[in-house]
Length: 422
Image 1 (cartoon, rainbow, N blue to C red):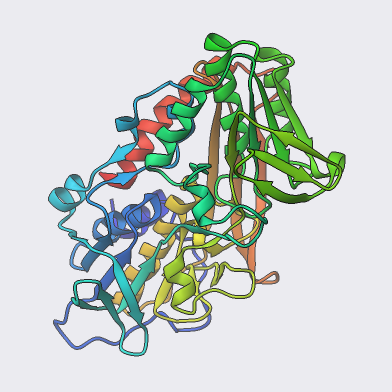
Image 2: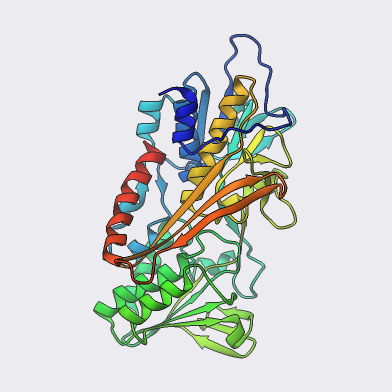
């Protein structure tokens, strides 16, 4: 397969070219083109892997603070008892062994943009020609009175892969008979738009077997949510009377959260929980903000043709941290964006302008082990809009076979993890 066909196969680039030549880089003859990828989740791992697949002579270093990545996608299935916690672990051996990527386990202390160096906590300096930044999300701890970072250690959000996933599962298992689980969903935009509703579904699956008189309440600062009609139908089919959605239009905005009493106070009411799961409002990961790559929205503005930061012509920002509406913040989106950035960087290393991308997002949600729904979007850069536009969208039809969707979702999970981590 020639290089252009490979890029098309990787959903990376189209045929038209950029007018600015900002990506073209002059390098001394024989000098390696150095790329540092920061963040080893689905976006960062995919970017590192595809950089080497597209252009094997690139010098690629992946910096990740942990030895293994714990996936947030799939964590609702662990909370619902479908898998052990170990199922969420993703390792980097295949990236190192099969791709020749240098893996550095360390925290990034600073992006010294003026010198084009990544400074690590250990003092190591990594010079770069390009950075791919995939830092995920951070939380807006000042958004809701009563729920800050300290409170989250008592009332887990479980919105990042790690110990809080197990904490929430254990709380669910220990909930009193006939108790109430309250999930507080975040306002838009946030990581994984259907996630809170999938969480409610799989928690209901767990409770239906072990605590069938229990109830789940979703307090939502929104008036609509992703795949809403499909979720509502699924709850009626699978868990009648068990899950209640309370939009802002019903009881007003969230006033405060009393962690000690496990109570959510709204403008026109309050709800007491036996198990309380608060998913706070979000913004770009801390490193992005600290490096001056975010704007007043809290997210990173980018040129969606190649996910180059609007604040720095040598840094690509992908995944949850970037602002690329109408594309949602999902692992699939991060994977697709990583391929666009990798292809653009490969072109820059050879002194060429990058093409205009077409991107795709496809998201499955489980409501039970054998019941899944999905949504798909196709996006293309619009010169007139100076951003992405949706050229096609679709959801699981109401009369579709949910078991078949679940089988497709399982196959996708396997192949998707392999595509990102090798």
